Structures are given as C-alpha cells and as structure tokens.
Amino acid sequence: MRVRVATTALGVTAALLAVPACSTDTTGVKPDAASARTGKPADAAQQAAPLTSAALETRLLDQSDLGSGYLRKPERPTQHDDVTVIGCPALSELGSDAATGGTLTFPHKAKADFAYGGSSSEISEELYSDSAEKLSDGIGRIFDAMTGCLTYQVVAGGTPIDMASQKLTTPHGLGDEQWSQLLTFSTGGRSTVVKQTAIRDGSLLLIVSGSPALVDRHLDKALTKATAAS
Image 1 (spheres, rainbow, N blue to C red):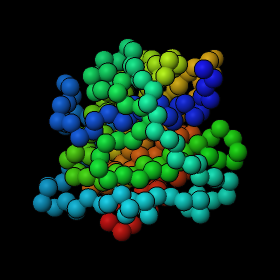
Image 2: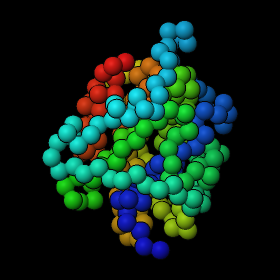
Image 3: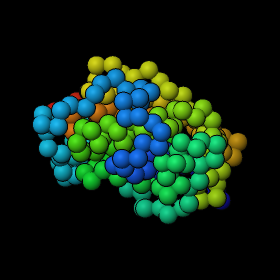
C-alpha cells in the first residue's frame, strides 16, 4: 500500500481524535487532571447555547484569511479502515481502534483543510460546539492519553505508523483552556511532524493541526474569527 506521509499524518491524527468525546467514562483520567489544562469549565447557567454546524462553518478561516499560496482541499470521503493502537493502552481504551479518519463526535462541527504553496505542508482547522463541560472533558482526556505515551504505533488500514508525542507549552491567554502537542509520524522511512493545538473558549472548541510553522502563524487568527461573534 503506497502512503503519502503528510496526508496519512493528518488523517491518522483525525482518526485518533475521533474517539467518543462525549462519553462519561474517564478510563482512569480524572476530568480535572488534564496535563495541559489551564482553566475550568464555566458554570452551566452562564454558558452560551451551543452553535449550530452552519454557524461554525461561517467562522472557519478561508483562503482570504490565510493569504496567498493556500488552496482549500476537498473534504475527504469517510474512511472505514481499521485503526489499531499498539503500545498505548490509554488510547486503546478510549476506543480509537473504532475511529477512522473522522472528526470528534460532538454534535455541532465544521472543518476545513488547506495545502500551502503546492508543497506537502498542510493545515487543518476544526470547530466544535457543545457545553463547556463536555468539550473540556472530551478533548482533555484525548490529549492526556496521547501525550501520556511518548512512543507507540498505529496500524491504519494495514499500514504501520510509528508515533512519538511531545506535550508542548500551551498558548496562555487564549480562551479558557488550552492543549498542545507535537506528533511525529514515521512510515516507509519518512517522517512527518504535526503540531496540534486545541483551545476551548466557552462553548466553542478550536483545533488547529498541521505544519508547526503554519499552526503558529494562523492560530491567533483562527481563534479571533471563531469567537468574533461569541
């Protein structure tokens, strides 16, 4: 099976993040013990109502926001390859072997993928909306599991991918809670590094993934547009 590493990296990242985010089963990770968490969900009475998927779509970055050289990629068709995690029990227990190339299971969501400069550099933006508590618990447990295993292997559709994760300092001052990690995907003698940063602002969750330089360049802009009308 021929694999393009950059595309596989982002696709497998999405697969790993597509676990049942709204489950109340913490699989041994306490909701207030997320490794990169810096805030707490607001009181339920003070939370804004979740945004619809249509409303989230209007808050995604577009090519005019990103600048020249960016091309929006068509939405990937839903894939049904089996995904198996080896060497990271926390991820396996979260059910990532049943998640393939999708998005988080929050009911309100929107996503856009971009390629930059005709190269293999990519950036992906995802927006979700739900109660602050559900967003915080869902994304926090996943990042805890992924950064809790320094190395592991993912087998996606029969293709083994060696993974290495590194927890990063979160961008303080942005939103209510922040998580960030650096993932290295290695397969077929090639490696790809993907940075992934998640920010929760009230009932909205932003995840920006891709080339580390592109994530750093556009994170603030993505959050500003996503929360402009909040």
